Amino acid sequence: MEHIVIIGNGISGVTAARHIRKLSDKRITIISAETEYFFSRTALMYVYMGHMKFEHTQPYENWFWKKNRIELKKGYVEQVKDSTKELVFTSGETLKYDKLIIATGSKPNKFGWPGQDLDGVMGMYHRQDLENLEKYAPNKEVCKRAVIVGGGLIGIELAEMLQSRDIPVTFLVRENSFWNGVLPAGESEMINKHIKEHHIDLRLGVNLQEIKADENGKVKSIIIKETGEEIPCTVVGLTAGVSPNVDFLKDSNIELGRGVKVNRRLETNVKDIYAIGDCAEQHEPIGQRRPIEAVWYTGRMMGETLAQTLCGNPRDYNPGHWFNSAKFLDIEYQTYGWVFGERGRPKYEKHFHWKHPKKHICITIAYHKESNKFLGINTFGIRMRHHSFDTWLNEERSVEYVLEHLADANFDPEFYKLHEKDIVAQFNQENNTNVQLKKKSWRRIFSY
Image (tube, rainbow, N blue to C red):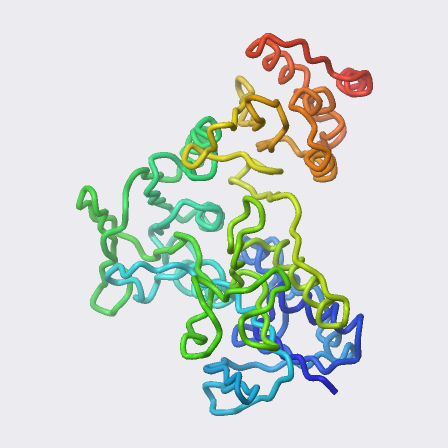
């Protein structure tokens, strides 16, 4: 019986295992050094905030794995011997495979800062990070202040977590405006304001110089590079992005870039070895997507795609149009298609930005300035339907068409105030056009 071994029990590896089992009777083994059972990584913050227990983050009961004949092995793989199709563990054990799937995910970035490995320094990615947070920041009496380094989505989640226990937070962001490498200026400025309104000490345009230790080897303070200011703290959260977790493969024959190099079939350069999820790096980017995408849903899609290939139904990985969602404290964020930030925006891309005059609600629509083709949308504080925008992107609709039907994409609950009339009116005023909401959209607006 063919033995498929998967290194990593995150969403990518577990999805591959589940779908291989649905399609075949192959022997399947999942290896993990982090936890025995699969859990939802994105739910870790809610465990710390008291909204759920850790066991609630596990989508499957513990009996699920045995019932579905998926073997689980706890251990850390130290070496892949592809010539003998053998894995070597740090314990000295070995395991044979017929086909190997590398799904080892990511690890928090470290940039050689002095003190970056002190007690009290952590990322917010692994189960062990949650345990460290409980140890070093259980409450404001133990943790007088935390400093977060890096202004991405994980950073703002960690800030919200710490604030839920009334722990003061200083937030170091090297950009001059929060996440402005991704968000257009108006949106980034709105998030800056929102963070400060939550009494988070947001420091823009600054970098970490070093983390200082007390006499016991624990975090005592940090130094800001630009000013030399020393900020006393107990915890330092390193959230300056993540990198593929592939160090254990550096002595193997597997081709590496930043991650494990794969083609559209998710194959590496070594026969019978594949890579999926955060650790996989496409040889050629797919459309405008990045070669590595540390996103939950793309990991799931890779697992589903590879399972089909390994079970006799060869398929190319095709993630479709880009989309994502997140929360910036109280503001829900969604993006569909491409809306580029201030850096790297194509010359042909034009933006229409609407913001509510009083509330943190806004949208930015990107479209081609010559053809008016709809390219993408960001929404803050308005829930939109994925299916609507995916369809309009596939059909290559115009920005006018999207605005005409914008209310049909609105997914906010009943009795929420809708803003499409104001959005369209501003677009018409700025562009000297006469876009009209369709009758169905108008009825929906005034029915409330």
